[in-house]
Length: 204
Image: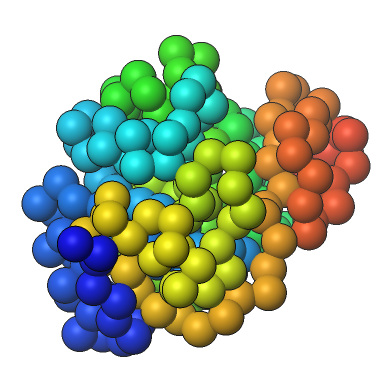
């Protein structure tokens, strides 16, 4: 049976929180495209997410409710922090070394995890309700276009998820993804945020 679709509001966020805490999967709007999420510390839920998406060996990022929550998950060096403070909340994912244990599927054994703080207030409220972290891959089958409406997500994932939150039509582009080593920035995926190859004058 297809998942229910609810308008994203305070009541549906409470329902989504209950789904996530019970090990379920939710689709939700972000500041870019619709996301597919679960508790990133729940190994069984992460496995469900990968099966729903048909994802193979590609890591999955985690959306965080704040820079502080991101820093609990990964080690953000001064250059990473400078980028985060310039572009968060917003469409920049920073890949950094893990500080905590998460299911191996999330990182694909790399020891690194992508994190970002999205720039949509309702999305932040959802993430905060779920403990400050929510797996944040795009809500589509691997190889298919990202979902920009709840209906598109329903068509692709409706039988594989437990709840879909409808935040209207989205016009964003998937986030820029970077990895920082010292001052050097490697762009792993281009997106709406332009980033230089080196962060100068690092500040914390």
